Length: 125
Image (tube, rainbow, N blue to C red; front, side, top):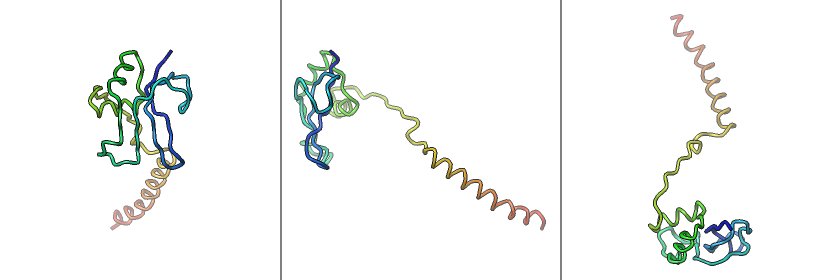
């Protein structure tokens, strides 16, 4: 059975509240879980102690049993100091999308066309 430590969403519409749970990876996000390990309230300020609460002993137990944390939980564990910081690299994150690249090319082409007559006039003088 593949175990995950992940977030299960609760709260009402536009007011998210998450439980940190140990669950079988085949179960739905908000479905059946084995154990509740803590809570996460993203509406609280980032420096608030109430924002993320975890039972670190139980989290460590599940990690020792082979449970894999999701990306968000792994970041929370890194912030808590129980997990080593992983190197992340997403080289495509900063590149513009297709439409933005097309607009930039069109803008560059128009600028080149506008600059061409000015260069010709300067060369004739």
